[in-house]
Length: 295
Image 1 (tube, rainbow, N blue to C red):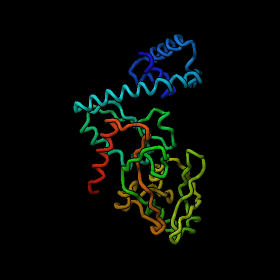
Image 2 (tube, rainbow, N blue to C red):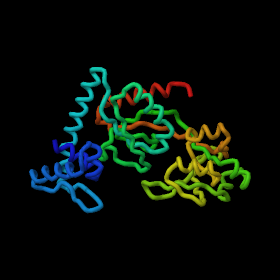
Image 3 (tube, helix red, strand yellow):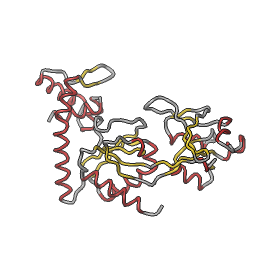
Image 4 (cartoon, rainbow, N blue to C red):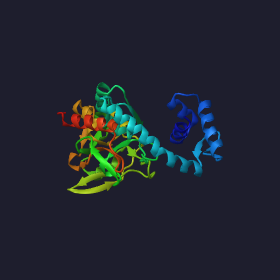
């Protein structure tokens, strides 16, 4: 069938990536698309040497056929699930920090229980439209999830903490107040969605304030900020679960603990209008079970 090739090319914005996903050659994928375009008498994709993008007609065509193919796939998954088999591919869009904080134990347990289920994880710090991008669900902080999504908690609320390595503190000392941060090398974080610099949200005598910091390094990956803090580069603002082991091992020290705010935690989210498929239900069941286990 040629239509799944159309959907894969639209999702991947690449003939080569779509061919790899489907397990066919790039030439075969290109030929399948051309056959459909010839039959329709319309170009579905605008091709250059560097990019592949849907034309207006292509976008309309994909919007028309995608729900039907998704429904067929979900029906097949439900039939397999009724026979005790959870299978198919669950596509998740996840920030790297979310993957590091909650995802690994869930995927390990899913692989043990449901060996026929494939979970494809796309690590992406930018907020994407998971429906348009062809994902089944995403994982983000609760405050970042749109109201038209169903949110399922994957972990407890957590604090955002200031940390630095002992080597940095021996050389520069520890800040005694929020105002002292202005004299320190702070690892800045650039927001991919807006391009702006993230202001650290802290508590100042019980009142939440947004603090602009400066430093020698700017990142867009919280996990890399943790690595830089461990290397003694400067002070980092991170979720406590991400650095909990380092704090226990005293590789990092927590600073100004009274300023830490509590975030709502990480959630799985998916479109409200979509039913929870067996593969998504399996993920949620494992996540909830693991969340009940003592840390």
